[in-house]
Amino acid sequence: MEMIKHNPVTGSLVEELKLIVGGGNVLADPEAMASYSRDETPHIEPHLPEVVVKPGDTAEVARVLVLANKAVVPVTPRGGGTGLNGGAVPIFGGIVMSLERMNRIKEIDEANFVAVVEPGVPLVELYRAVEDCGLYYPVYPGEKSAFIGGNVATNAGGMRAVKYGVTRSFVQGLEAVLPTGEIIRAGGKFVKCSTGYDLTQLIVGSEGTLAVVTEVTLRLIPPPGSQEVLFIPFIDLHQAIRAVPEILKQRTSIAGLEFMEKDAIRYIEEYTERALPFHEHGAFLLAILEDDTQEEVYQAASRVAEVCAQYGSVDVYVPPSERAKRELMESREKLGPAMRRHGAEELADVVVPRSRIVDFVTLVKEISRRYEIPIVAFGHAGDGNVHLYPLREGMDAKKWEARLPRVMEEIYRGGASLGGMISGEHGLGFKKTAYLPLTMSREQIALMSRLKTAFDPNHILNPGKVFDAG
Ligand SMILES: Cc1cc2nc3c(=O)[nH]c(=O)nc-3n(C[C@H](O)[C@H](O)[C@H](O)COP(=O)(O)OP(=O)(O)OC[C@H]3O[C@@H](n4cnc5c(N)ncnc54)[C@H](O)[C@@H]3O)c2cc1C
Image (tube, rainbow, N blue to C red):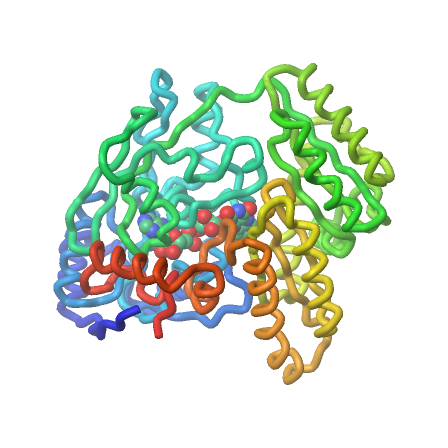
C-alpha cells in the first residue's frame, strides 16, 4: 500500500472545524479526547487524536472531509467505539470524526419493510423502534451499544447469522460521503437492482477506509412467531462440534448455533455471578430456534435434542421462563467481557467453512499444547466463526511475548489452510492487517488498493486500517 505523508492538525484547521460543526462539537483537550483514543480491543495502546469533531448532518461531514482532504490530514470515522481490532483508533493522529450526534431514526417504512437511520443510532435503539412497529431486525452482534454505522462498516455478524445472515444481508442502501467531499447515494428502498456496480455492498465492511456512511436503509422482516433457546451439555468440545453439521441439516428453524467450552462457562459464571446449568460438563452448544409457529419450533427443538443425543450430549436444558431465556442469552453475550477481565490480551475471529470447524478447533488445540498457552474457544459454530482467546495464565512476560505472535500466526495460517479467512465479523482494523496476505492473493490486495485510491486519492480516510501501513 502506497504511503502518503499526512500533515498535522494546525490551530487554524481547528478554528475552521469549529466554524463547520460549532465550537461545542470540537474537542482538542487531551483529557476530553482520551475516550476517543481506544476502542474495545483488548490490551491496546491508546492513540490520542489531534482533534475530535462531531458533525450533526451529512453536509457537515462533507465540509469536514473537504477541509481534511485539502490539508492532507487523516480522518478516522468513529461509531460506538466497540470494535475489537482498533478500527476506530486514530493510529496516525489527525481528526477523529465521531458520528455520535447523527443518531436519528429517520423513518420506519412499514410498507417497504425498511428503516432509514443515521449512522450514530445505537443498535439497542434500533431494536426498540423496530419492535414498536411490529417488525424485526434480526442481526444480533453481542454488543448493543455499537452504532449502526459501525455495524455497517465492519459488516457485523453475531448470533443469528445462521438463519438470517449478517449486517450486509440487511443493508439495502446507503448515503455516504467520499473523502473528497462528494455525497453519494447507493441502493435504496427497492429490493432488487441490476443497475451498475453495487457500491452499497462495497462500502459495507470497508471499515471506514472508503467513505463515511451518513445514512443507512436497512431491510426489516416480520418477527418470528415463536422462539426457543436450548443449552446442550456434552462431555467434550469435539463431541459438541461434531454434532453441528447434523443439527444444521434440521434447517430453517435454527437461527443461531453457538459453542462454548467448559473454561468459557467458568469465566462467564465468575463474571455474571450466576451459575449455568450442567456447568460441570466439558462443552456446550446453545441453539437459538426461531420460526413462524410454536409447533415448528418445538418440532425443531426435539430434532436438535435427538441429534445431540446421537453425538453424546448429556442432557438438554430448556429455560423454563422468558427471564431464564434472557439470562441464558445474556450469559453468552458476556463472554467477551468475561475473558477480558481474565486478562485476555488477544482475540482471534477466524471463519472457516462449516465443514472444517472440527479440523480447525483440533488444530488450535494442538497449537495450544505445543506453546503451553491455554486457548479458550467459543463462537458461532453454525457459521464456522470461531473466537479464540489465548490466555497468559501467569506465563512470564518474556516467554509470553516471544510465543504469542507465533501462536496467532499459526492460528491464522491454520484457518487459511482450511479455506478460511482471518476475520469472520470483527474486521481487520490495524491489528490484523499484517495477516491479510495469508488469505488473499497479491492480485486481490492490489485491486483493493487501487479501489482505495479511487475513493480516497490522498489516503486520508482511516489510514493504516485493513491494509498494512508499511
Ligand atoms: C462485548 C462485545 C461483543 C461483541 N460481539 C460482536 C459480535 O457478536 N459480532 C460482531 O460482529 N461484532 C461484535 N463485537 C464488535 C463490535 O461491536 C462490532 O465490530 C461493531 O460493529 C462496531 O461498531 P461501533 O459502532 O462500535 O464501531 P467503532 O468501533 O466505532 O468502529 C468500527 C469501524 O467502523 C468504522 N466506522 C464507524 N462508523 C462509521 C461510519 N459512519 N462510516 C464509516 N466508517 C465507520 C470505524 O472507522 C472503524 O473502522 C463485539 C464487541 C464487544 C465489545
